[in-house]
Length: 217
Length: 217
Image (tube, rainbow over all chains, first blue to last red; front, top):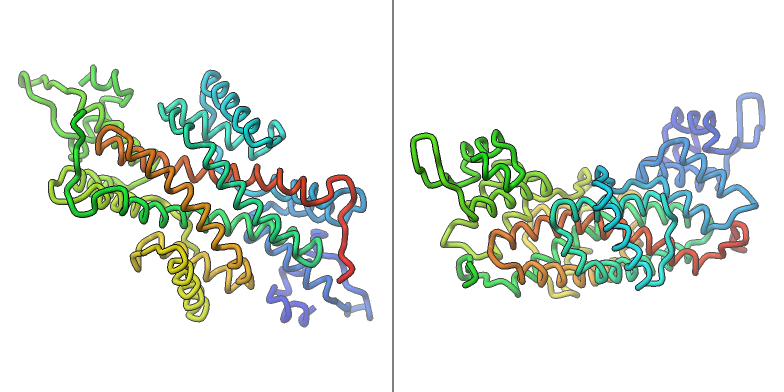
């Protein structure tokens, strides 16, 4: 186990905890106090760390992901779905009925346009409904005019994401890549958008002159 | 003031606080205990709420934004820059020198490719360097192969964003639109990407069969 810890960089106490929780399969016992660990343990440890530390999944959800991964009954698409359910998303407090109804209609129109399907009640749908309903309630409903372009950009990134993970060598690394690509990808996409906004702003707004007020005022 | 509160939906105590802090300009005094407020107060209140409640800016940063907005010396591009500095971004703990050097080289290459400029030390650059360095340190440097497509998507969204706010009627609403579009836009973009990933995954991975392990294993 000291060797597994050295190779993986995961402390022995943490490895013991993972074994107790069933997040890591036991090594092959070679003596009462010794067990042999192999490449499958290194690989699983990487995945467990990615699920817990990068993805922020609870131990219970991480167990669900691993159980799905180890099952011979379910597809990789399903495993990825279980994983996605555990990843953090913005979830504003619910607005009133009218705002939610508007948000639902907006989302359905968007899905129709892109030929997307969604699962009612999934965390992703809850997040979208919550954000849209909050915008509506605060008087920013017209921002929806740009939503189609957001969805198009999201789809372009998602296609790169899924192609990237599909090329990884085995199911463990695919699930790991999905967590890493989603979470770090969120942070990169958000920061790159800020950088792009600043660069577009420099071309659209006069950078020398003072704040220009329109005649309308 | 009761009328201003009723029209804007902002409590009287909050309006008094904004007046004390200089976030809102005083009304025209009509008697020792009365002041008249007009459309500029409603507009400014909306902006202050957006900066503090949606943007999460500190009162000090909100003051800087408003001071820049009210100055006759600075451009709207500059005001937007001051605003962006205050918006929240992922900022992982700094990795080691090697990881940071790699992150810098990666970012410079990306900026060259897109003909973007960036300000060293800005929160956006710090976030990008932090995320990239962390990915490198954790062994996910090869995710950088998809970074160009992320930047392209970010630019597409940013162009829509900036064009959207440029069409708003006055500087106050442009700054407000930038905060709202950036913050709610982040949440929408992240959630739409998850929805798109699920839809792309359904076409790329076999949804019926079990988890398929490659021959390589």
